[in-house]
Length: 486
Image (cartoon, one colour):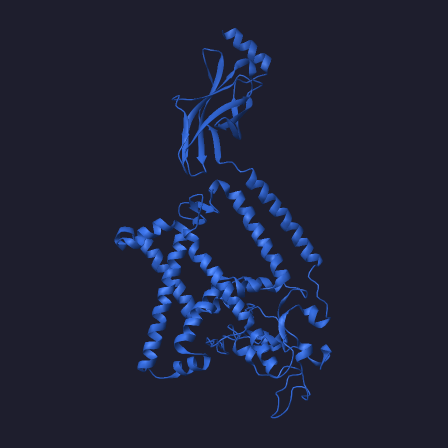
Protein backbone atom coordinates (compact mmCIF):
# COMPACT_ATOMS: atom_id res chain seq x y z
CA UNK A 1 0.00 0.00 0.00
CA UNK A 2 1.18 3.51 -0.78
CA UNK A 3 2.01 5.59 2.29
CA UNK A 4 3.74 8.68 0.91
CA UNK A 5 2.13 11.76 -0.54
CA UNK A 6 4.84 12.07 -3.19
CA UNK A 7 3.48 9.07 -5.07
CA UNK A 8 0.11 10.69 -5.56
CA UNK A 9 -0.53 14.27 -6.58
CA UNK A 10 -3.99 15.72 -7.06
CA UNK A 11 -4.80 16.59 -10.66
CA UNK A 12 -5.63 20.28 -10.33
CA UNK A 13 -7.03 20.57 -13.87
CA UNK A 14 -10.48 19.64 -12.60
CA UNK A 15 -10.68 23.04 -10.92
CA UNK A 16 -10.72 24.75 -14.33
CA UNK A 17 -14.24 23.49 -15.10
CA UNK A 18 -17.35 22.05 -13.50
CA UNK A 19 -18.95 18.71 -14.26
CA UNK A 20 -22.28 20.17 -15.34
CA UNK A 21 -20.99 22.47 -18.12
CA UNK A 22 -19.09 21.43 -21.26
CA UNK A 23 -16.36 23.34 -23.11
CA UNK A 24 -18.95 25.27 -25.13
CA UNK A 25 -20.71 26.38 -21.94
CA UNK A 26 -23.73 24.14 -22.48
CA UNK A 27 -25.48 22.31 -19.66
CA UNK A 28 -24.47 18.69 -19.07
CA UNK A 29 -27.45 16.87 -17.61
CA UNK A 30 -26.56 14.82 -14.54
CA UNK A 31 -27.96 11.29 -14.20
CA UNK A 32 -26.82 10.14 -10.74
CA UNK A 33 -27.00 6.44 -10.01
CA UNK A 34 -29.62 5.45 -7.46
CA UNK A 35 -27.91 5.57 -4.04
CA UNK A 36 -28.18 2.94 -1.33
CA UNK A 37 -26.34 1.95 1.80
CA UNK A 38 -25.94 2.78 5.48
CA UNK A 39 -25.64 6.57 5.19
CA UNK A 40 -28.46 6.75 2.69
CA UNK A 41 -30.77 4.97 5.12
CA UNK A 42 -29.77 7.47 7.80
CA UNK A 43 -30.53 10.32 5.40
CA UNK A 44 -33.99 8.86 4.79
CA UNK A 45 -34.71 8.91 8.54
CA UNK A 46 -33.41 12.49 8.87
CA UNK A 47 -35.38 13.58 5.79
CA UNK A 48 -38.65 12.08 7.05
CA UNK A 49 -38.22 13.86 10.38
CA UNK A 50 -37.26 17.27 8.92
CA UNK A 51 -39.87 17.30 6.16
CA UNK A 52 -42.57 16.17 8.61
CA UNK A 53 -41.57 19.08 10.84
CA UNK A 54 -41.57 21.44 7.86
CA UNK A 55 -45.08 20.54 6.68
CA UNK A 56 -46.50 20.34 10.21
CA UNK A 57 -44.89 23.63 11.26
CA UNK A 58 -47.71 25.98 10.20
CA UNK A 59 -50.21 23.91 12.20
CA UNK A 60 -48.14 23.66 15.37
CA UNK A 61 -49.05 26.24 18.01
CA UNK A 62 -47.63 27.38 21.32
CA UNK A 63 -50.06 29.14 23.61
CA UNK A 64 -52.52 29.42 20.74
CA UNK A 65 -49.97 31.11 18.48
CA UNK A 66 -48.03 29.71 15.50
CA UNK A 67 -44.73 27.98 16.09
CA UNK A 68 -43.25 30.10 13.30
CA UNK A 69 -44.77 32.96 11.31
CA UNK A 70 -42.71 35.24 9.06
CA UNK A 71 -45.28 37.75 7.84
CA UNK A 72 -43.08 40.14 5.92
CA UNK A 73 -46.08 41.90 4.38
CA UNK A 74 -47.52 42.99 7.73
CA UNK A 75 -44.10 43.10 9.39
CA UNK A 76 -45.21 40.61 11.99
CA UNK A 77 -43.06 37.72 13.12
CA UNK A 78 -43.82 34.92 15.56
CA UNK A 79 -41.05 32.60 16.73
CA UNK A 80 -41.88 29.77 19.15
CA UNK A 81 -45.16 31.48 19.95
CA UNK A 82 -43.53 34.81 20.84
CA UNK A 83 -44.38 37.88 18.72
CA UNK A 84 -41.71 40.17 17.28
CA UNK A 85 -42.28 43.50 15.57
CA UNK A 86 -40.20 45.99 13.58
CA UNK A 87 -39.42 47.63 16.93
CA UNK A 88 -37.51 44.44 17.79
CA UNK A 89 -35.09 44.92 14.89
CA UNK A 90 -32.11 44.86 17.25
CA UNK A 91 -33.10 41.38 18.41
CA UNK A 92 -33.45 40.24 14.80
CA UNK A 93 -30.03 41.66 13.92
CA UNK A 94 -28.36 39.93 16.88
CA UNK A 95 -30.14 36.67 16.03
CA UNK A 96 -28.96 36.77 12.41
CA UNK A 97 -25.39 37.57 13.45
CA UNK A 98 -25.48 34.71 15.97
CA UNK A 99 -26.81 32.30 13.34
CA UNK A 100 -24.16 33.43 10.86
CA UNK A 101 -21.34 32.86 13.39
CA UNK A 102 -22.82 29.44 14.21
CA UNK A 103 -22.78 28.52 10.50
CA UNK A 104 -19.15 29.63 10.28
CA UNK A 105 -18.20 27.55 13.33
CA UNK A 106 -20.18 24.56 12.07
CA UNK A 107 -18.51 24.78 8.66
CA UNK A 108 -15.00 25.13 10.10
CA UNK A 109 -15.53 21.93 12.11
CA UNK A 110 -17.85 19.80 9.96
CA UNK A 111 -17.63 21.27 6.46
CA UNK A 112 -20.75 21.31 4.30
CA UNK A 113 -22.75 18.65 6.17
CA UNK A 114 -25.71 21.07 6.40
CA UNK A 115 -26.10 21.01 2.62
CA UNK A 116 -26.39 17.27 2.26
CA UNK A 117 -28.39 16.46 5.36
CA UNK A 118 -30.54 19.44 6.35
CA UNK A 119 -30.83 21.92 3.47
CA UNK A 120 -34.43 21.90 2.08
CA UNK A 121 -33.09 22.21 -1.48
CA UNK A 122 -31.08 18.99 -1.20
CA UNK A 123 -33.69 17.10 0.81
CA UNK A 124 -36.45 17.77 -1.71
CA UNK A 125 -34.21 17.26 -4.74
CA UNK A 126 -32.46 14.05 -3.73
CA UNK A 127 -34.92 12.45 -1.34
CA UNK A 128 -38.26 13.38 -2.95
CA UNK A 129 -38.07 14.42 -6.61
CA UNK A 130 -35.28 12.04 -7.64
CA UNK A 131 -36.99 9.19 -5.79
CA UNK A 132 -40.08 9.79 -7.89
CA UNK A 133 -37.90 9.92 -11.01
CA UNK A 134 -36.26 6.60 -10.13
CA UNK A 135 -39.67 5.07 -9.49
CA UNK A 136 -41.16 6.15 -12.82
CA UNK A 137 -38.19 6.26 -15.22
CA UNK A 138 -35.78 3.82 -13.58
CA UNK A 139 -32.11 4.17 -12.64
CA UNK A 140 -29.56 6.40 -14.41
CA UNK A 141 -29.01 4.19 -17.53
CA UNK A 142 -32.77 3.81 -18.06
CA UNK A 143 -33.25 7.57 -17.78
CA UNK A 144 -30.54 8.21 -20.39
CA UNK A 145 -32.11 5.73 -22.79
CA UNK A 146 -35.58 7.20 -22.26
CA UNK A 147 -34.41 10.75 -22.99
CA UNK A 148 -32.66 9.64 -26.20
CA UNK A 149 -35.66 7.72 -27.47
CA UNK A 150 -38.09 9.30 -29.96
CA UNK A 151 -41.47 10.24 -28.58
CA UNK A 152 -43.37 7.03 -27.89
CA UNK A 153 -46.41 6.26 -25.78
CA UNK A 154 -44.19 4.88 -22.99
CA UNK A 155 -42.03 8.01 -22.96
CA UNK A 156 -45.07 10.28 -23.12
CA UNK A 157 -46.91 8.74 -20.17
CA UNK A 158 -43.77 8.46 -18.03
CA UNK A 159 -42.73 12.05 -18.63
CA UNK A 160 -46.26 13.36 -18.25
CA UNK A 161 -46.86 11.42 -15.03
CA UNK A 162 -43.55 12.54 -13.58
CA UNK A 163 -44.10 16.21 -14.27
CA UNK A 164 -47.69 16.17 -13.03
CA UNK A 165 -46.45 14.74 -9.73
CA UNK A 166 -43.65 17.34 -9.68
CA UNK A 167 -46.21 20.13 -10.13
CA UNK A 168 -48.46 18.73 -7.37
CA UNK A 169 -45.55 18.53 -4.93
CA UNK A 170 -44.48 22.05 -5.91
CA UNK A 171 -48.03 23.21 -5.15
CA UNK A 172 -47.85 21.56 -1.74
CA UNK A 173 -44.52 23.24 -0.99
CA UNK A 174 -45.77 26.64 -2.15
CA UNK A 175 -48.87 26.40 0.04
CA UNK A 176 -46.69 25.45 3.00
CA UNK A 177 -44.33 28.38 2.40
CA UNK A 178 -47.27 30.78 2.10
CA UNK A 179 -48.70 29.42 5.35
CA UNK A 180 -45.43 30.31 7.06
CA UNK A 181 -45.73 33.86 5.68
CA UNK A 182 -49.41 34.78 6.11
CA UNK A 183 -50.67 32.01 8.38
CA UNK A 184 -52.74 28.86 7.91
CA UNK A 185 -56.15 30.54 8.03
CA UNK A 186 -55.25 33.21 5.46
CA UNK A 187 -53.81 30.52 3.17
CA UNK A 188 -56.97 28.43 3.54
CA UNK A 189 -59.09 31.48 2.67
CA UNK A 190 -57.11 31.93 -0.55
CA UNK A 191 -57.49 28.33 -1.72
CA UNK A 192 -61.13 27.99 -0.66
CA UNK A 193 -62.36 31.05 -2.57
CA UNK A 194 -62.26 32.15 -6.16
CA UNK A 195 -58.89 33.54 -7.31
CA UNK A 196 -60.62 36.81 -8.22
CA UNK A 197 -61.45 37.39 -4.54
CA UNK A 198 -57.78 37.40 -3.58
CA UNK A 199 -55.76 37.89 -6.74
CA UNK A 200 -52.55 38.87 -4.91
CA UNK A 201 -52.57 35.66 -2.87
CA UNK A 202 -53.38 33.54 -5.92
CA UNK A 203 -50.55 35.11 -7.92
CA UNK A 204 -48.16 34.54 -5.01
CA UNK A 205 -49.10 30.84 -4.92
CA UNK A 206 -48.60 30.46 -8.67
CA UNK A 207 -45.25 32.25 -8.56
CA UNK A 208 -44.00 30.09 -5.68
CA UNK A 209 -45.21 26.94 -7.45
CA UNK A 210 -43.49 27.94 -10.69
CA UNK A 211 -40.23 28.65 -8.89
CA UNK A 212 -40.20 25.35 -7.01
CA UNK A 213 -41.16 23.36 -10.09
CA UNK A 214 -38.48 25.07 -12.17
CA UNK A 215 -35.81 24.44 -9.55
CA UNK A 216 -36.58 20.76 -9.01
CA UNK A 217 -37.54 19.83 -12.56
CA UNK A 218 -34.88 21.74 -14.50
CA UNK A 219 -32.44 23.83 -12.47
CA UNK A 220 -31.66 21.09 -9.95
CA UNK A 221 -28.03 20.84 -8.79
CA UNK A 222 -27.25 24.23 -10.34
CA UNK A 223 -28.91 25.81 -7.30
CA UNK A 224 -26.11 24.36 -5.15
CA UNK A 225 -23.31 24.88 -7.66
CA UNK A 226 -24.05 28.27 -9.19
CA UNK A 227 -26.52 30.10 -6.94
CA UNK A 228 -26.01 29.14 -3.30
CA UNK A 229 -23.28 31.30 -1.74
CA UNK A 230 -22.53 28.71 0.93
CA UNK A 231 -20.37 26.66 -1.43
CA UNK A 232 -18.17 29.69 -2.06
CA UNK A 233 -18.18 30.55 1.62
CA UNK A 234 -16.82 27.16 2.61
CA UNK A 235 -13.80 27.82 0.39
CA UNK A 236 -12.58 30.45 2.83
CA UNK A 237 -13.83 28.70 5.98
CA UNK A 238 -12.54 25.17 5.56
CA UNK A 239 -9.18 24.32 7.09
CA UNK A 240 -7.11 21.17 6.98
CA UNK A 241 -8.70 20.03 10.23
CA UNK A 242 -12.29 20.41 8.96
CA UNK A 243 -14.19 17.12 8.73
CA UNK A 244 -15.56 16.60 5.21
CA UNK A 245 -16.36 13.73 2.87
CA UNK A 246 -12.81 12.84 1.84
CA UNK A 247 -10.99 10.25 -0.25
CA UNK A 248 -8.03 8.54 1.46
CA UNK A 249 -5.44 8.99 -1.27
CA UNK A 250 -2.68 7.38 0.79
CA UNK A 251 -4.64 4.17 0.85
CA UNK A 252 -6.29 4.38 -2.57
CA UNK A 253 -3.44 5.43 -4.87
CA UNK A 254 -2.19 4.48 -7.34
CA UNK A 255 -5.48 3.41 -8.84
CA UNK A 256 -5.83 0.30 -10.88
CA UNK A 257 -8.47 -2.13 -12.08
CA UNK A 258 -8.53 -5.70 -10.88
CA UNK A 259 -7.64 -8.14 -13.62
CA UNK A 260 -9.61 -11.29 -14.22
CA UNK A 261 -9.09 -13.86 -11.45
CA UNK A 262 -6.81 -11.39 -9.61
CA UNK A 263 -7.43 -10.84 -5.92
CA UNK A 264 -7.28 -7.42 -4.31
CA UNK A 265 -4.46 -8.61 -2.04
CA UNK A 266 -2.32 -9.57 -5.04
CA UNK A 267 -2.91 -6.33 -6.97
CA UNK A 268 0.10 -4.00 -7.16
CA UNK A 269 -1.85 -0.82 -6.68
CA UNK A 270 -3.91 0.99 -4.05
CA UNK A 271 -7.33 0.00 -2.82
CA UNK A 272 -9.12 2.16 -5.41
CA UNK A 273 -9.98 -0.06 -8.37
CA UNK A 274 -11.13 2.93 -10.45
CA UNK A 275 -14.71 1.64 -10.77
CA UNK A 276 -15.94 5.26 -10.79
CA UNK A 277 -19.08 4.38 -8.84
CA UNK A 278 -18.32 7.31 -6.53
CA UNK A 279 -18.62 9.56 -9.59
CA UNK A 280 -21.76 7.86 -10.94
CA UNK A 281 -23.74 8.33 -7.72
CA UNK A 282 -22.69 11.95 -7.16
CA UNK A 283 -25.68 14.31 -7.59
CA UNK A 284 -23.39 17.17 -8.64
CA UNK A 285 -21.23 15.08 -10.97
CA UNK A 286 -17.85 15.55 -9.25
CA UNK A 287 -15.04 13.08 -8.66
CA UNK A 288 -14.42 13.12 -4.92
CA UNK A 289 -11.00 11.57 -5.53
CA UNK A 290 -9.82 14.96 -6.76
CA UNK A 291 -10.18 16.36 -3.26
CA UNK A 292 -12.58 18.76 -1.55
CA UNK A 293 -14.61 20.80 -4.04
CA UNK A 294 -17.19 23.53 -3.64
CA UNK A 295 -19.74 21.41 -5.58
CA UNK A 296 -19.63 18.66 -2.93
CA UNK A 297 -22.67 18.81 -0.66
CA UNK A 298 -21.47 16.01 1.65
CA UNK A 299 -24.45 13.82 0.79
CA UNK A 300 -22.32 10.67 1.47
CA UNK A 301 -23.62 8.81 -1.62
CA UNK A 302 -20.00 8.21 -2.65
CA UNK A 303 -19.20 6.74 0.78
CA UNK A 304 -21.98 4.16 0.48
CA UNK A 305 -20.99 3.24 -3.09
CA UNK A 306 -17.31 2.86 -2.22
CA UNK A 307 -17.97 0.88 0.96
CA UNK A 308 -20.07 -1.57 -1.05
CA UNK A 309 -17.20 -2.08 -3.51
CA UNK A 310 -14.65 -2.51 -0.72
CA UNK A 311 -16.74 -5.27 0.82
CA UNK A 312 -16.97 -7.07 -2.52
CA UNK A 313 -13.20 -7.05 -3.08
CA UNK A 314 -12.37 -7.93 0.51
CA UNK A 315 -10.97 -4.57 1.58
CA UNK A 316 -11.89 -2.58 4.69
CA UNK A 317 -14.50 0.12 4.33
CA UNK A 318 -13.66 3.79 4.64
CA UNK A 319 -11.64 4.50 1.51
CA UNK A 320 -14.04 7.44 1.21
CA UNK A 321 -15.22 8.62 4.62
CA UNK A 322 -15.81 11.57 6.90
CA UNK A 323 -12.29 12.79 7.59
CA UNK A 324 -10.06 15.86 7.55
CA UNK A 325 -7.01 16.44 5.39
CA UNK A 326 -4.73 16.20 8.41
CA UNK A 327 -6.36 13.03 9.67
CA UNK A 328 -5.53 11.36 6.34
CA UNK A 329 -2.14 12.93 5.66
CA UNK A 330 -0.71 12.96 9.18
CA UNK A 331 -3.08 10.54 10.91
CA UNK A 332 -3.97 13.35 13.33
CA UNK A 333 -7.61 14.02 14.12
CA UNK A 334 -7.84 17.46 15.68
CA UNK A 335 -11.10 19.38 15.94
CA UNK A 336 -10.27 21.99 18.58
CA UNK A 337 -8.07 24.58 16.87
CA UNK A 338 -7.36 28.26 17.65
CA UNK A 339 -9.85 29.27 14.97
CA UNK A 340 -12.56 27.03 16.45
CA UNK A 341 -11.87 28.44 19.92
CA UNK A 342 -12.07 32.02 18.63
CA UNK A 343 -15.38 31.44 16.84
CA UNK A 344 -16.75 29.60 19.90
CA UNK A 345 -15.91 32.53 22.18
CA UNK A 346 -17.65 34.96 19.81
CA UNK A 347 -20.66 32.62 19.54
CA UNK A 348 -20.99 32.25 23.31
CA UNK A 349 -20.78 36.03 23.72
CA UNK A 350 -23.50 36.58 21.10
CA UNK A 351 -25.74 33.94 22.66
CA UNK A 352 -25.27 35.66 26.01
CA UNK A 353 -26.20 39.04 24.56
CA UNK A 354 -29.22 37.58 22.75
CA UNK A 355 -30.39 35.83 25.92
CA UNK A 356 -30.10 39.06 27.91
CA UNK A 357 -31.97 41.08 25.28
CA UNK A 358 -34.78 38.50 25.12
CA UNK A 359 -35.01 38.27 28.91
CA UNK A 360 -35.27 42.05 29.31
CA UNK A 361 -37.57 42.57 26.34
CA UNK A 362 -40.77 44.43 27.25
CA UNK A 363 -44.22 43.47 26.00
CA UNK A 364 -44.93 47.16 25.44
CA UNK A 365 -42.81 49.73 23.66
CA UNK A 366 -43.51 53.37 24.42
CA UNK A 367 -42.49 56.35 22.33
CA UNK A 368 -43.02 59.87 23.66
CA UNK A 369 -42.31 62.93 21.50
CA UNK A 370 -43.06 66.58 22.11
CA UNK A 371 -45.74 67.94 19.80
CA UNK A 372 -43.89 69.72 17.02
CA UNK A 373 -44.03 73.53 17.06
CA UNK A 374 -45.40 73.87 20.60
CA UNK A 375 -43.79 75.74 23.54
CA UNK A 376 -44.34 75.46 27.25
CA UNK A 377 -47.45 76.84 28.90
CA UNK A 378 -48.03 78.34 32.35
CA UNK A 379 -51.05 77.09 34.26
CA UNK A 380 -53.06 78.89 36.90
CA UNK A 381 -52.16 76.32 39.54
CA UNK A 382 -48.42 77.06 39.37
CA UNK A 383 -47.29 74.44 36.85
CA UNK A 384 -45.37 74.58 33.57
CA UNK A 385 -46.84 72.18 30.98
CA UNK A 386 -45.67 70.64 27.71
CA UNK A 387 -47.78 68.79 25.13
CA UNK A 388 -46.67 65.33 23.90
CA UNK A 389 -47.67 62.66 21.41
CA UNK A 390 -47.38 59.26 23.08
CA UNK A 391 -47.47 55.93 21.25
CA UNK A 392 -47.80 52.52 22.88
CA UNK A 393 -47.06 49.36 20.85
CA UNK A 394 -48.60 46.17 22.25
CA UNK A 395 -46.39 43.19 21.34
CA UNK A 396 -48.71 40.65 22.90
CA UNK A 397 -51.78 38.81 21.60
CA UNK A 398 -54.20 40.25 24.15
CA UNK A 399 -55.52 43.68 25.07
CA UNK A 400 -53.74 45.42 27.93
CA UNK A 401 -54.48 48.40 30.17
CA UNK A 402 -51.61 50.68 31.14
CA UNK A 403 -50.93 53.44 33.62
CA UNK A 404 -48.21 56.02 32.98
CA UNK A 405 -46.68 57.91 35.91
CA UNK A 406 -43.93 60.52 36.09
CA UNK A 407 -41.20 59.27 38.42
CA UNK A 408 -39.01 62.37 38.29
CA UNK A 409 -38.84 65.27 38.81
CA UNK A 410 -40.87 65.15 42.00
CA UNK A 411 -44.36 66.55 41.78
CA UNK A 412 -44.64 66.21 37.99
CA UNK A 413 -47.92 64.97 36.51
CA UNK A 414 -48.68 63.05 33.29
CA UNK A 415 -52.25 63.48 32.11
CA UNK A 416 -54.09 62.41 28.96
CA UNK A 417 -55.84 65.33 27.28
CA UNK A 418 -59.25 63.62 27.13
CA UNK A 419 -58.81 62.01 30.55
CA UNK A 420 -59.58 58.47 29.29
CA UNK A 421 -57.62 55.37 30.44
CA UNK A 422 -54.89 53.85 28.29
CA UNK A 423 -56.09 50.63 26.65
CA UNK A 424 -53.85 49.17 23.96
CA UNK A 425 -55.45 46.61 21.58
CA UNK A 426 -53.91 43.19 21.02
CA UNK A 427 -51.08 43.30 18.48
CA UNK A 428 -51.95 46.95 18.01
CA UNK A 429 -50.90 50.53 18.60
CA UNK A 430 -52.43 53.17 20.86
CA UNK A 431 -51.75 56.83 20.15
CA UNK A 432 -52.72 59.70 22.43
CA UNK A 433 -51.96 63.29 23.33
CA UNK A 434 -50.73 63.94 26.87
CA UNK A 435 -49.76 66.88 29.08
CA UNK A 436 -46.74 66.76 31.34
CA UNK A 437 -46.96 69.31 34.14
CA UNK A 438 -44.05 70.21 36.40
CA UNK A 439 -44.16 72.56 39.38
CA UNK A 440 -42.31 75.78 38.65
CA UNK A 441 -39.96 75.38 41.59
CA UNK A 442 -38.98 71.86 40.42
CA UNK A 443 -37.48 73.07 37.13
CA UNK A 444 -33.70 73.02 36.88
CA UNK A 445 -33.24 74.99 33.69
CA UNK A 446 -34.59 75.47 30.20
CA UNK A 447 -34.50 71.74 29.53
CA UNK A 448 -35.44 69.07 32.03
CA UNK A 449 -35.34 65.31 31.57
CA UNK A 450 -38.57 63.68 32.65
CA UNK A 451 -38.55 59.98 33.57
CA UNK A 452 -41.82 58.14 33.11
CA UNK A 453 -42.78 54.66 34.34
CA UNK A 454 -45.24 52.47 32.44
CA UNK A 455 -47.24 50.14 34.70
CA UNK A 456 -49.41 47.12 33.95
CA UNK A 457 -51.52 45.72 36.79
CA UNK A 458 -49.38 47.71 39.21
CA UNK A 459 -46.11 46.26 37.91
CA UNK A 460 -43.47 48.44 36.27
CA UNK A 461 -42.81 47.10 32.77
CA UNK A 462 -40.91 49.93 31.10
CA UNK A 463 -39.21 53.27 31.71
CA UNK A 464 -38.97 56.05 29.13
CA UNK A 465 -37.55 59.54 29.04
CA UNK A 466 -38.88 62.80 27.62
CA UNK A 467 -37.39 66.26 27.23
CA UNK A 468 -39.31 69.02 28.94
CA UNK A 469 -38.94 72.67 27.88
CA UNK A 470 -39.32 75.43 30.47
CA UNK A 471 -38.44 79.10 30.85
CA UNK A 472 -34.82 80.07 30.15
CA UNK A 473 -32.57 80.82 33.12
CA UNK A 474 -31.28 79.30 36.34
CA UNK A 475 -33.77 77.88 38.78
CA UNK A 476 -33.43 80.84 41.18
CA UNK A 477 -33.96 83.35 38.39
CA UNK A 478 -36.94 81.42 37.11
CA UNK A 479 -38.48 81.28 40.54
CA UNK A 480 -37.96 85.01 41.19
CA UNK A 481 -39.33 86.00 37.79
CA UNK A 482 -42.38 83.84 38.18
CA UNK A 483 -43.06 85.23 41.64
CA UNK A 484 -42.79 88.79 40.27
CA UNK A 485 -45.23 87.94 37.51
CA UNK A 486 -47.71 86.67 40.07
